Image (tube, rainbow, N blue to C red; front, side, top):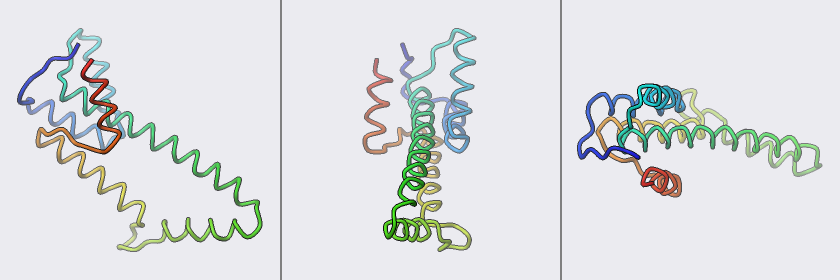
Length: 137
């Protein structure tokens, strides 16, 4: 199903690196172009495209669930203040105008982008294992 190439080409590394900051959009378009051109993506490109799409969808779903639960908990007395303080502490700017959550998300994105550009398979626990099982088929 996927072409196995020991060393990825430069265009594959660029596409794989660009797919993370765009939340999977570049990878999705690359896979669509590959389907229309009837070409098979390499394991490297497919791995990074699928990982970026999976992480982006997971981030959006977790964000919606978090804010739905936060809205639900905000109506409970006493607990609403604790949860509100936690949200403020995690989103309070600590380094210039970046909060703890922004620093965490940006550092993961930078790690994924740099390793993809270097031609390496990035590893994130649990996520990478799922994507490797999809790409091995």
